[in-house]
Amino acid sequence: MSSWSEQILAGDPRALARAATAVENRTPAAEQLLKELFSHTGRAAVIGITGAPGAGKSSLADRLIHELRRERKRVGVVAVDPTSPYTGGAILGDRIRMLSHHADAGVFIRSMATRGWLGGLAAAATDMTLLLDAAGKDVVLVETVGVGQDEVEIAKLADVTVVVLVPGMGDDVQAIKAGIMEIADVFVINKSDQPGADRLQREIKAIQSLSTRKDGWVPPIVHTVATEGKGIAEALAAVRSFLERGGAKDRAVENWNLRLREMLRERLLDRFAGLNFEKAAEEIAARRTDPYTTIDGWLKQILD
Amino acid sequence: MSSWSEQILAGDPRALARAATAVENRTPAAEQLLKELFSHTGRAAVIGITGAPGAGKSSLADRLIHELRRERKRVGVVAVDPTSPYTGGAILGDRIRMLSHHADAGVFIRSMATRGWLGGLAAAATDMTLLLDAAGKDVVLVETVGVGQDEVEIAKLADVTVVVLVPGMGDDVQAIKAGIMEIADVFVINKSDQPGADRLQREIKAIQSLSTRKDGWVPPIVHTVATEGKGIAEALAAVRSFLERGGAKDRAVENWNLRLREMLRERLLDRFAGLNFEKAAEEIAARRTDPYTTIDGWLKQILD
Image (cartoon, rainbow over the protein chains, first blue to last red):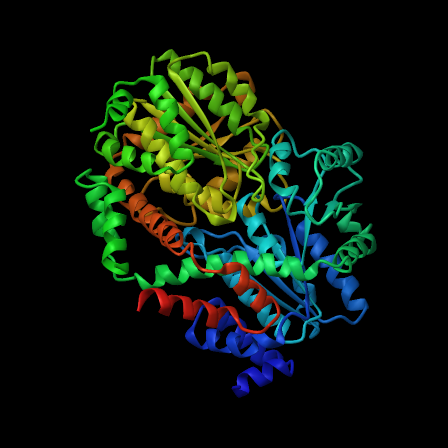
C-alpha cells in the first residue's frame, strides 16, 4: 500500500483532494489508488438525490448536510454537473449555495462534469464515491441534475435513491414518473407548500398501487420545503428506514453487476483508440460504405 | 437485395411497420435489412426535438407534422419514451395526442422505449431514423423526453436539433442551458404567452454572446404557443434556414464519428455475453476482490 493510500485512509484532506482530482482525470495513478483502497470501502451510506430540473435538489442536499453535520457525521458530496459535451466546461449554477459548507472540514464536496456522449459519468462518479467512502466519510450524497438516463445511472451507485418531485410541473412529469418509479426508494415532494402537493402524492400512490417491487419495499413519500428547512428530519428518517430494511447486500450485488458492464464497455473503447473513426465516418456519410459493415470489420480485426 | 428491402424502398407501409419492429428488437434480420437499405438513406431531413419535461415538445411536434402534411411531405416520427430500466415498459403519456395522425398514411409514428442503463437508445433510434429515411420519408422528427445525456444523444442523430424551452422553469434551467447551448441549432421558446418569455430570450442571447460556434451559426430564437398553433411556421422556417446553411456534410461526418463509437461499444458488450457478471458482482460486493482487477482479468482473457 502506498503512503498516498495510507494518508487517505487516515482522513488527510489534502491527500483526498489530490486523489479526487486524479480520479476525475482518470489517471493511471488513480486506478492504482482505487485498487488499494477498495477493500476499505463499503462503510459509507451512499445517498443518491435525483429529480427534474428546478425540483430543489441542491437545497435539499444542503439541508441534509446541515442535519448530518449536527450529528457529527462526516459527509462527502459528489455533485454531478450538466455540462457541454463538446467543451467540457461546467457551470456550477445553484451549487454555489453549498459553498457554505466548504469551510467545514467534515464536509468534502466535489463537483463533476458529465462526460458527454462517451459515457463514463457513472463510472467516474462511482470511483469518486468509493474514494470518499475509503476516506472515512459516513455518508456520501450524490446529486445529479437531470432526468432520464442520468437517474438510472445514479440508482446504480447509490445504496438508496431519493427522487425529488415538485407540484405542478406539467404534463409529461407523468411520463417521467414511469422511468423513476422503480429507482425511487424514497420520494420527496419538495416545495410542498405550493398548490398540488397532495394531488402529486395521490398520483404517486396510485402508481405505486399498480405493482409491487421485487424487494417488497413501498417507497415512503415525504413532504418538504427545503428552502425553509421543513421536513428534512423526516426525509432523513425515511432514507434511514430504507437503509436499515435489510436487503442492502442484494442491492449492492445488483449495482455492481450493472457497473461492471459499464466499466467493461469503457475499457474496451479505450483499447481501440487506434481505429480511424474520422475516416470511417467520412466514408459512411458519403454512403461509400455502411456503418454495420464497418463495425463488423473492426470487430473481426480486433477479436478474431 | 431482399424483397423486403424492395418493399420498404417502394414505401409499402406494412413492410415498413414489420421492419420497424425488427429494428426495435435488434434482430439479425433487421441488421441485414439496414445494410441493404443504407445506401438509399441520407435524403430525409432529420429534425431532433428536445428539451426539459413540460416544455411542450409533443405539442410542437404535433403542429409541425400538420404543417408538413399541408405541404404534402411524407413524415416519420420517432418518439423516444422514458421507461422503466427494469421492466422495459413504456408509458406513452401525452404522445396520445399524436394518435390524430395515425389515420394519415403519410405519417409513420413509432414510439421507442429507452433501453435503460445498457445504452443503445441512440443506436436504436438512429437505426429507426435510417429505416424511415430509406422508406422515403421527406422529414423524420425525433422527439425525446429528457434533459442531460439524452439531449446529447439526439444531437448525434439529427441534421438539426431544436431545443424547446419555456419561461419560468426555475433555478437550474440555467444549469441545463450549459449542456444544451451547443447542441441547439434552433431555440423555441414555447408557451411564450406566459410571463418571462422575453427574459428567457435575453438570457439565451446573453449566453450566445459569450462564445462563437465552430460553424459560425447563431441559433435563431423562435417564440411559439404550440397548443394554439402560434409560431409554428416561423419555427419550421428557422429549421430550414439551418438545413440550407451549408455545412450539412461536416455535421453528418461528425455525427457518424460519434455513432460509430457508440455502436462499437455495444457490439463489444454483446460479444462478451458469456462473462459471469453476477458472480463477479457478488465477489466485489463482499470485497473479496475489486472491480478494477476483475475488469483487467476479463480484458486479458478476451483480447490477448
